[in-house]
Length: 159
Image 1 (cartoon, one colour):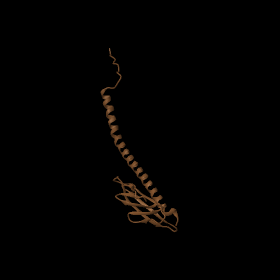
Image 2: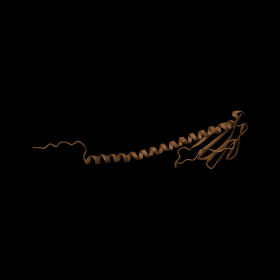
Image 3: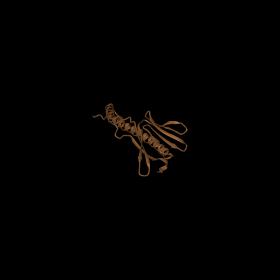
Image 4: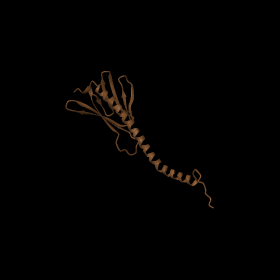
């Protein structure tokens, strides 16, 4: 007479070890991919923050140039803008762009700056000003140089 064994509910030790081995292999493949994606996400987040910071600084600079009542005076590291309320000065020093307001208050408008240069561009009826800003980067290999350019005309565009 044959004995019939009842199948017990549950898993035996070999099944559990097999599932654990498969899980470990899947995690071994997934974790490096997740780490790479997370690292790229953090880099993209930093780049987005940099873009927002530069755009805000560029808009402030553009408004200051437009509010000038005379032609801006540019040197290698500074730009002086005479406005109705006083003189606004932009200065590139210590890897930052510093803005000095007419009341004498000075603060860093933009930090982590590799270079900041202001160029005068004479056009047929007007002189435009171009501000080129290049940011420092934390990446070893840079695919796209973080270089920004802003244009403005002093005195609201009057020749």
